[in-house]
Structure formats: C-alpha cells, structure tokens
Amino acid sequence: MEVKGRDPATECYRVTHKVDGQCFSALVPERLAADLHMIGARPSHQEAYVWIAGHRKKIEAAIEQLARGTRRPKAPFDQITLIKDR
Image (tube, rainbow, N blue to C red; front, side, top):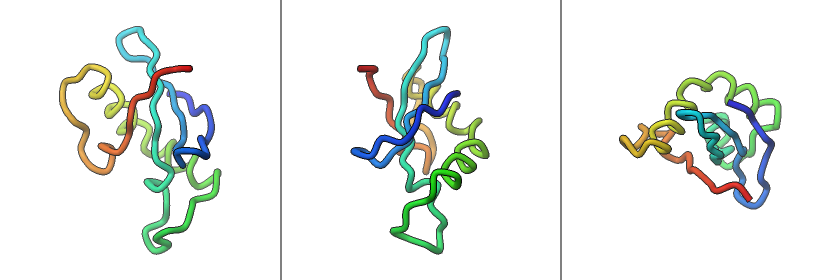
C-alpha cells in the first residue's frame, strides 16, 4: 500500500494498493485517525500517516474486500471507498 497524500476536497487520504495484480485507489477518511478525545479536530499529517501505518493490514484487507466484492469491511474500515483514477 502506498499513501499518495491528502485530498482536501474529501478530507481523506488517497492510497493505492495492488489486488490480484491490479492497482486500486481508495480514500481513507482522515477522521479515522483523529484522537477520540478531540472529536471534530483534524489529525496532523504525521498523526494520520502514523495511524495509517499502524492500521495498514486492516486498510489493505478492506480495499481487497471492496475490490473483489466479497463482503463489506467491518467498521470503521467500512468508511473506506474505492475511487477511479483520473
């Protein structure tokens, strides 16, 4: 999985991940990385990247489930969405 940066319009981090030989892009909401005691606050880029790295396997599994259409990821990873590359 590779983090491509933050998309300010969607308040998500754009990531790519290869599934069955095909590269998929997905949006990971930055709110997932927000500290629970700071509801409504945005995480810093560093906090978001640390959170994404710490949850890498679960994010990749969610992308794989969405790409294959096998099942819906469990919360909170059900908030991740696949996007078409521009």
